[in-house]
Length: 380
Image (cartoon, rainbow, N blue to C red):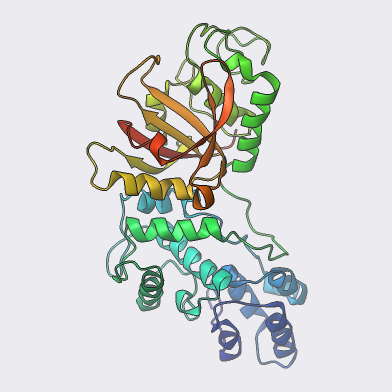
């Protein structure tokens, strides 16, 4: 066996996976099987590595408790979002399609295998799971069958191909059915900044000095790297009698622990240039979606699908036809999403008099020149 390679699973372990989930009772049965010599201790590491998204509440903690030190069991946190991966986001944005027999980034395949396995467990859908291959980064027969089963159940064209429509629906289901507390988490932390922290920072800025982000006052920023910001949050930095949506949005990111985009001189980009900072492997943003309503067929449906997957901390940028704005665009920070229940996404944003939180509906965006959904990707 090559060091670091997963140990093949015995039939005893595979039987525990056939229903698409791993419960604490099944972990207890595995403990007895290990003691009886029916299961190798090293198999538990493979179980954690390739099938972690099938763990039910408490199962991770239970597995960690029965694993001998030499097994090196590392239980990674269950998947939260396909958009936390740049490669996964390319599929959501329609730039990449995944299919059997077609070359694709392993990172993207892994993200969608994690998503299928997770939803298989969370919704009791064993046909969506991968009980044989697990999450291995290979788009084979089992992954194709799982994709077809998901498409069939969701009323999508049954192709076995992960196109943009399938990807957005899979992400939508992950929004509706978040990760359980499997316990015993010893894997890496979330790679992207904490969206809940960014959303709270935006609300805190509104509560403490929202009027500073109205048109009339001078701008004051918490970011010490802004040119001339001698006393962060107190120094008057200009922008008097100017719209401050981009300034508020980027300050919210900074205050929430993310690295906001800045021009080489240190100033924040204007709203319509912010999406340009989602290009490259180390960019401050991951682009989850881009829609140009006047140029895109079914633009309303695509914006609708993106609003369903917007999470707290995400940033919405629109490009205007024109009007009384300084840069022809607007920046919003998502702070809550109840789109599936009442058709609105709560967005923190600078307005004429002050920064506020407003519920935004589909009609807020369909008349714009362009719509972008971005996710902060780099912690400061």
